[in-house]
Length: 363
Image (tube, rainbow, N blue to C red; front, side):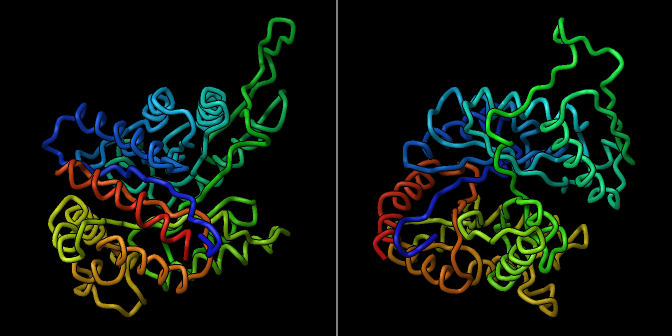
């Protein structure tokens, strides 16, 4: 996001839905949102992956995004993240390469761990192995996207062997590679302050994607770690590669926007995440500073310091302040919420795209 042009725009469907709403309706509304985003000029559409949650209920984002591709023509799509510990790397490499061709090169990729404890239990993953599994999987995927068989990879968690049954005349042993060269843009999720993982990912040329629940102090630390990682890898940090997600709600008046953001699906989503991380002992993830008290992490705190809600002029002002506080970034990613009141959410999107974005571009 710079001062010469309006920012690139993304939408992130976590998803968090009303667990009492039929799953098919949730998916239909998420698809409707994707089409609406393209109509309004959004650049990226991201979808999360969760396997055992009634709230976060998209288990295979690549399948959902394939449907999105059929309803759109320009918007880029991406799973955010592909939960690598739950899948064999050869399967991930093959299906993403396939999806890149199916999309005609509209694919973004975000690699990361999972976050739902029941997902880890179901797949038999020890939480302490999540990070090492992600790294090993990425290494194998990139090899499969760049090297020809014979391939013999033995890791701590997976093995890939393709050497004994190769038959070039019959096309046996040929692996799909992505359409985009050398591969689609790879993003890494950024949550924790001073993350060594972000630094290592940046050294490999991966792009940072910062979480929507964190404040400016942690966002600045993400940029710092990304910058250090880029220089470790011998390349210059590029602000245009940084995506920042925010919860944004726009209404005709600021009073109306704040009241709705507190009580609608946005506010309920924030309270859901607070409680989920409280139960797992991870509330520190959302703290402004390490010494902030647990009891301060309320919906009021997030409305005051993290959520952006107001009329178009107020939302524009807050986004300018965000830019001034953390520096330049490339893509502003809005967080999608359940259509508890579809009319108000569509109106918010219209106000954002037709009034806030032009004002940012003219600033």
